[in-house]
Length: 143
Image 1 (spheres, helix red, strand yellow):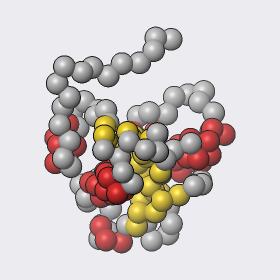
Image 2 (cartoon, one colour):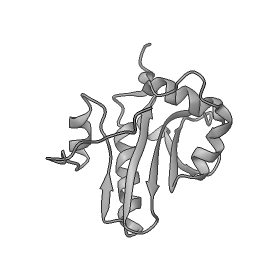
Image 3 (cartoon, helix red, strand yellow):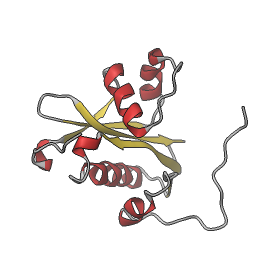
Image 4 (cartoon, helix red, strand yellow):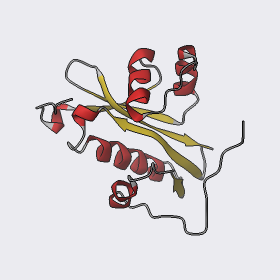
């Protein structure tokens, strides 16, 4: 897909408690995370269960990117699901999402902010002030 010719300042970040499920699913697909068989009806629960969801939207109010904070509401939080449509990448939107989520986490008293980087995206997160957690390995339950 070709790049979009739009000024980055024309993209607005909005904290949401609801959003069009199809647009969120399209973003998950762009990130390579949407699995066939997942239930689109879970998107409202995903959004409401998050501490904060930021949607990057264009002038027509279409989602072009997103990111979430998942938190205990007190001390620890994770930045999750940061994604921008490919045609909107390299415009600083992803950095704005991460930096805004990080700043909100800090302003709300979270002193531990973590994330899991996709392979090859480590430098992106390092530029936002994150570093590799030496001697720690992210893990998932086996299915």
